Amino acid sequence: MKHYTKDELLKFYDMDLNELISLSEKITKENFSNEVEACSIISAKTGACNENCKYCSQSKHNKAQIECHPLMETEEVKQAAINAKKNGATRFCIVTSGRKTEEKEFAKILEMIKAVASIDGLHCCASLGLLTKDQIKAIKEAGVERFNHNINTCESYYSEICTTHNYQDRINTIKMLQEEGIEACTGVILGMGETRENRVEMALALAEINPKTVPVNILNPIKGTKLENYGDKIDEEEVLRTICIFRIAMPKTILRYAGGRSTRFSKEYQKLGLKAGINGLLIGNYLTTDGELVNEDKQMLDEMNLSFVK
Image (cartoon, rainbow, N blue to C red; front, side, top):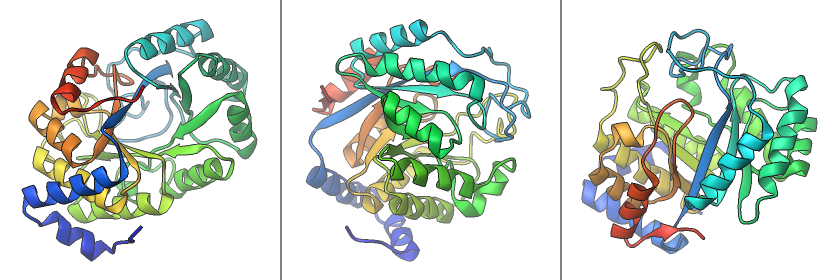
């Protein structure tokens, strides 16, 4: 795999859009089939987070009006996973709010993981914040195959978004996960005021991390958060160009549409993104916001001669 420099990736950004999409599409076809991996998530614990991430509706430092709840019951999580599988998901991610998993809740989360992992044909993923090595070993033994831990933005811009933890905290957790044989699902949020150069830094950092999949989120400016007025910080074409840059930098990584696509990315551009290299979808609802209807996603894929991974 070719390793690009920052200047090389910036030059790709300036290409004619159709030529850039064609280049990205060619790389995708060389490395993937016409199947799209579908993943669904559940917010098993919502809100009351002490971290000060400016984009997040679950942060105590923001004033977003959301419905918070403590850790859900295992059976409720398992039923949601079964429903996700019926809708076409082959992966189901258990997500909890907060910097790290509280020890008193960890045993119950392990029960949830075992319950989801026991469902035939469904792979269990998790997103539980910062973990210790012993916790990572425990979730792997319980059945977690892939763990979501986003970098969100590049290192040089990180302090503009969060100061209660730093970029390196996230990198350290990702490395520990990979060392224990758990696949990394490591994504970004576009449109938080970062520059094009910052997005190239993200692409280079992700290429170095080499995650199995990269969720591409587009900021959904939620009222009550510090970024509620950031709806104009990125346009559809720039998101599309960034998807192409990510594909060029990471030819063998699954690029996944995640949060924000239903509110910030039109169907026309979603299709162009699929052509350019998106080959994963987060289906159903997100953590505190609604997502696309599954039937509409299936129709869009059918129109693109694509289908969910079985």
